[in-house]
Length: 357
Image (cartoon, rainbow, N blue to C red; front, side):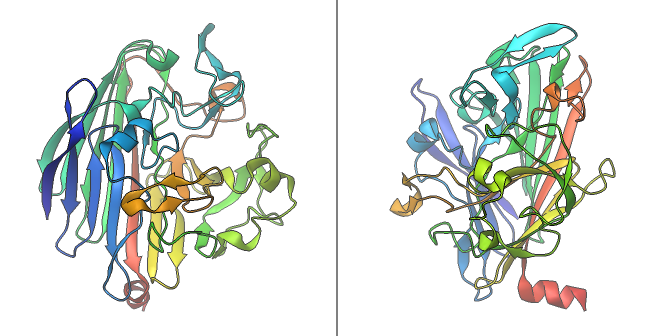
């Protein structure tokens, strides 16, 4: 196990951003930069023993300064949608950037957590802690927020993200990572042949502006039914309203057994590469997004990322929960700790089959 640090580039203000390589003895490697705690690459061996980079990203820091698609991004203070870009806590109204029509998405795509330089500390031979202090009022949220995320690579080819945060005022906290995965390799194009399973019997439908309606609906009999593994592309061109509203999949799933600690939430499998990715989380929801808005973005090695070149699996509290009475809102009192844990586990098909015998 090892952590290697290299210079990634200089920010416009002259500060240096670094790239951290976390690697185990099996060759599994995750590269993440302290600028925005953006995942730059995830290298995993396929069934032929070849290293495959399964994360969309960029070769140069300059591209992360732009990064409107939020490739590999740590999202905060709140992931996903907030209707009308405003919310109330104890009768006080707070206003956010209107960056998706009249609504807000991912807090602030221009000045969010993915576009600030974090402090970084190697805390073990396989782990790095990234820390940031968000000033009171930053992005429109109340309270000074002290936040950290620990990236840990395991010997079993797992990537663990451990989030902690505490605020000086009662506030909304909902963090995640927005990495785009392509288990065929970041350069391999469309992900519609990837097979997906989501351990959810329900999802939260959205309106035409992709704001959750407040309903919790069964997946049975809908294109949202991923209870058994099936390809992303099977129903992605369906005339179902939910598919039309999202222009594909861009929906929150209600993961089974909430408040039971870390449990399996989803999996994705690329048959040709033999790579299975399992997602574990202690959060109640998971946003499944199929890269519907990616449009001719030049990524690593000059590869052009296009529509559905990657998919996201983002553990989270439900979107717009702060404005939806039927959803659990992640509002934390001053001094109350927010914590969440997510693991992306990569397994070769042969290993999985042998382990299940």
